[in-house]
Image (cartoon, rainbow, N blue to C red; front, side, top):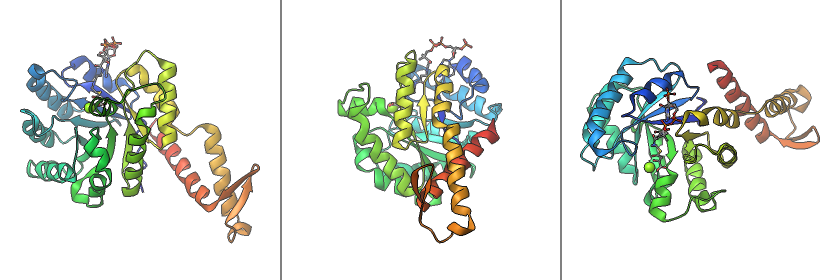
Length: 293
Ligand SMILES: CC(C)(COP(=O)(O)OP(=O)(O)OC[C@H]1O[C@@H](n2cnc3c(N)ncnc32)[C@H](O)[C@@H]1OP(=O)(O)O)[C@@H](O)C(=O)NCCC(=O)NCCSC(=O)C[C@H](O)C(=O)O
Ligand SMILES: [Mg+2]
């Protein structure tokens, strides 16, 4: 069972951008990714690391989940990033360019050795062809609590780079990669958030891509600009009509006269007990969203 923590909107910001780190405290994003990897130029890496760790230690991010994206361990900065992130104790550390289950288990061991607190989880970027081919074995590591894996993050820009697929409207080229990762996430009980939409001035295109991600089964979407937060929160929250229908399905299955029935009709539609399970999740996530606002 995946978590009921709302992760509709997950906003990246460059760890080198002090203004963005401060502004994030005022935004309605469910989670923030303070990035040390691709959004930070090589000569700014060390200063960004110091700035991000100071910001995480100082706090002030309220209900927002705080995640640090480190550089890969094969880079000159990766090991020091991990040590510093473990000591800062964010909600999660995001590992870029995961390719094998060992990338999760070895990182989990490293942050434990660096003294990371128990609450610090691992999030994994799914953004290499090898990660897609190994999705089941990578995400299966979540079955061992010591691996700390709790969320997959799609990296569609890197997938496009590595596969030479084009990021077109409708994302035909990405659908297989996205769906394989949704299946892996659901099979092993972790959350999954969709990749970014680079054209942050195109509201209609962004909304359509949010809806597509939601319909594919994503829990939310990663974002690059504050103006994407509101639309994303709206699309990934159950709509009023959906919540009302879910409550009705639950109510009808709970009636004493329906206890031995497997299929019923609600508003002219066939519903089975599996729909009652889905309805309970819809209501629970809607309540979790209301509770945080
Ligand atoms: C894309 C940007 C560089 C645009 O920045 P800017 O030109 O400053 O935008 P605005 O002038 O419109 O900004 C308005 C105000 O909002 C603040 N701001 C902007 N972006 C963010 C943000 N992401 N988080 C928080 N605050 C933000 C500005 O500071 C302005 O504030 P104020 O002056 O007080 O009004 C910029 O948006 C940006 O850097 N975005 C994030 C880029 C990033 O992190 N990229 C890496 C992640 S994407 C990725 O790697 C995905 C994955 O790995 C893959 O492979 O797909
Ligand atoms: Mg990437």
